[in-house]
Length: 386
Ligand SMILES: *[C@@H]1O[C@H](CO)[C@@H](O)[C@H](O)[C@H]1NC(C)=O
Ligand SMILES: *[C@@H]1O[C@H](CO)[C@@H](O)[C@H](O)[C@H]1NC(C)=O
Ligand SMILES: *[C@@H]1O[C@H](CO)[C@@H](O)[C@H](O)[C@H]1NC(C)=O
Ligand SMILES: *[C@@H]1O[C@H](CO)[C@@H](O)[C@H](O)[C@H]1NC(C)=O
Ligand SMILES: *[C@@H]1O[C@H](CO)[C@@H](O)[C@H](O)[C@H]1NC(C)=O
Image (cartoon, rainbow, N blue to C red; front, side, top):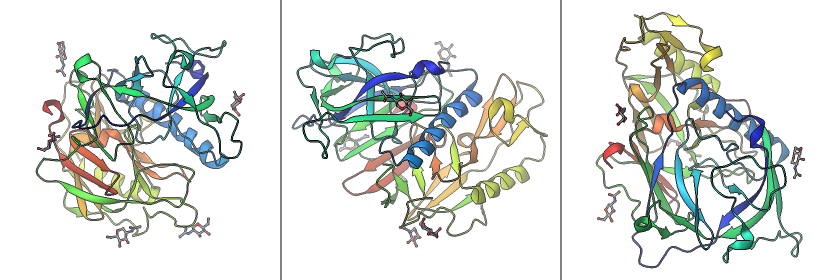
């Protein structure tokens, strides 16, 4: 853990590269470092992000980005090379943010230690600063505050190179009009997840469902909203108020976003309580246990021993506008083998924030964000053999 160490002065970068002409697209590997304390650590990370968003929302700020260099937990990392000549850095793949940032040189005493040399914009032939509309000749500063610190710097444009090996390396543009990813089993640290950018990002799988993105009237936060209309556990449709997930057209509150950078799923309380009650009623053979201090999750069961297998659970179905997303039991219940705790990997969302579909619930699903068509598509997939 790196509590206050994540305070840093940074330059944030906005993509300027164009996709190499004729390229089929870009394939990037995503990895997730392993931690034995899956639950508590992932939740603490989510909470830091949540408090960041709350602050960002209350100050009317326009950016939101992951805060920490600590990469042990529930986040998926990609290799991103910055500048010309390209220098490689691990970066969190996060659809819940609209800012790319890294520490850069020169840096006073405010940078944290990192294994790679600091990116130096002065040494890159493709860096150029971005100017703000209001002050055309001035650099454009930003300062994003988080629960545990802040990141501040100037906005710039730069060339990014994706891929970890020379053969993979393709200059790409993250704002290509579509991208897809397939996240492997959360606890399986050996396998590699995949991110595809550009034309090769398409769902050839069977059982594809599609739902349109919903536009938020709030400019302040750039998120991928989708229209969730109901939830079933097994074959039982939960009695969730029809407007529970609706996005307020006036002030942009509410709604549900899909986010690769948040681990667990956060639902508006009226919906969360229904899911919690449904899961509780299905698990009749195990005692509940208050493990909120260790896990931060409020519905946990105690297995008789660390080698016991939890009972099989029916799938949960998220009913989106136009398509159902089926989430297997293992993708909404999380087992912490060391402690024998088995918990619902969901929580009540924080008041004033949208509901969030986190990455734990997206495992073994191929998910396509088609920005041109304004459509989210998804299909079950074995992401380990993708
Ligand atoms: C960024 O904001 C934080 C919190 O308001 C403040 O403590 C910090 O000094 C600011 N940093 C810069 C470089 O302005
Ligand atoms: C991961 O790889 C290690 C070393 O090869 C092996 O011991 C372990 O069983 C593997 N874990 C999984 C989940 O496949
Ligand atoms: C899907 O099919 C297209 C056309 O055959 C191909 O270019 C693309 O790589 C395929 N995508 C995946 C994810 O297999
Ligand atoms: C939407 O937001 C506006 C402005 O904050 C508020 O007056 C209105 O009551 C909200 N609508 C709903 C349905 O909550
Ligand atoms: C959400 O989906 C429902 C059901 O299809 C539809 O009635 C509603 O208009 C949609 N809302 C938005 C904001 O698209």
